Length: 221
Image 1: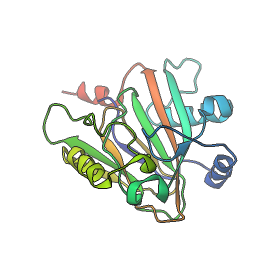
Image 2: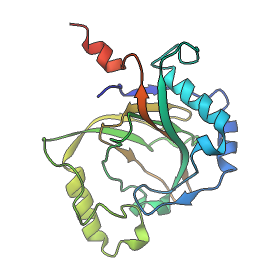
Image 3: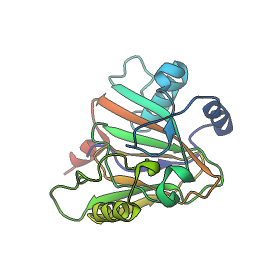
């Protein structure tokens, strides 16, 4: 792993303007590999905002990111995501997973007064295969497609029981969580009927830099 688990408070200077912008966008549901609905990638919708978001995020680890002499390059995908009670079985059931295609993932929590809907960081209890069974690895979050909820809960618990929670980051309004893409994690949700969990999720791919934060730390012997 190359990036530490990090939570920054008060990330945006104008969070309510960001919420207003997010609410003006269109959202689409997927085939069940994540709960709720997401927007298009911000690089296509709002390129200037996308550039600002990525540079501000990367500046946490690379202070000179805006300098022309900076040798930090990246690809990223940033989308707003909305999750409601109806998007999850019982409003709470989520799967431990990783974002291994991403160098690191960032999540900005944008729902005021909605604590208890953050992210848990997990570690496997043992080495080996920790992925979903063939029966359960498709359509995790399409509740209408789940014919046998008892079997669904059984598969989910069997999978999640392979991990133990190492850390929890709560959904503090306007806080920004960053973690390595290889780190197992899951949404820790307690969404009530009528509530919406709004986040801005960015996957940073192919980050090229003179150093990585944890790699730099390990050089100190």
